[in-house]
Length: 487
Image (cartoon, rainbow, N blue to C red):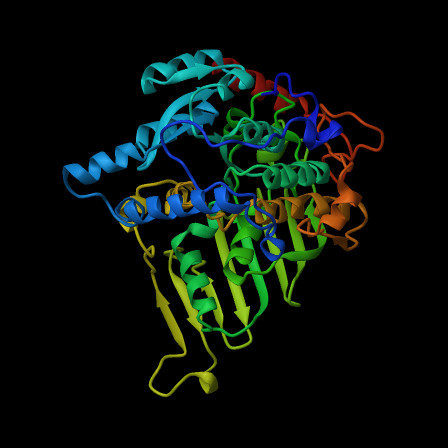
């Protein structure tokens, strides 16, 4: 999906599309303030800001039941309806997911997609307004936008939504280039709407429990971590998910889809990658899941991250055999990891015998539950994690407090893959992951449009594979024609 009438905001600068929002509309109202990096947060805006902040805090106190537990009785249900956030979704798949689950606190009011037939069907099933033009969609009377469009298009869509005075929840990736990263951050800072990066893997039960135990000091200081997102699929499934040779799933370099593996390590430990060395397992012509698909990228990627604080972390993600998600955190007093075998939702804690208090076990293995809303979360997708991204978005809108996975953390998680691809193409040399909270650093990257996107042809454009540029073979094209024509 392309943005209509975008006026090329990345090239011309974010100022052309970002405007200061004003308090308006009935319905949900949040505290309105400008946000900056947490270490250099900008001050409030005088009496008006204080009044709005106090009003939002009063609203938050009144709606505690809605945030922390199910409402009870008629009054509770009426209060929840009164405080519902009206949301529009870009992407019919995610729109159906949200609408059919009637997520507490949200009212789905509009869906936007370029698939006209699918859009009509979704509109009938959900009873909501439908749009094929993004600019018209943003004119709909709603509070927030959930971006579930193409992986490489989220930043410009988010910038335009913020300019239209909408709260934004963006799926991965937050940005596709370093220039988009700078523009997105500055758009969020210029707005007083909520921006949440909807990376969901940190919210799996075992990751939330590891975060709690790490912050309680159970394994000491972070020294080494691993995050894995291994997701093989048959060629026909890959083709059904990526219709068209230029679909992003067919050409993004193997390092780019990294947030499901790097984000949990960052979330648990509170650290960020500062430098990366990228490696790939090249395209394998003898692997039918690759050779019979339309992919022109490599099989998988490993990224070695030098983290803030001196730790080292490894990210592994891609289409290797052996489906699974795995996180391992070594501290200087112990180890935490989720299960590799059997029940992979289990958590293992290990302390060396000489450091284990008398009467306690060196090894503890158990299956953690979610810290709250356990039943609702387990009914949601991605191991319950989808529930918590929506909950975090709702809480941020209601309270006016920035979400934990905000624009800065979302950009950190996303640009790891971009910089790792630079490393791969430089024989795995180390490459900086700039901390764009630092305004002085942004100047260096504001015009960095480096991208392998076939639609963004440019001098010096990188390939999608370490092997260079190539086209899908005859068998892949035959299967693609069959899968795509059968749809």
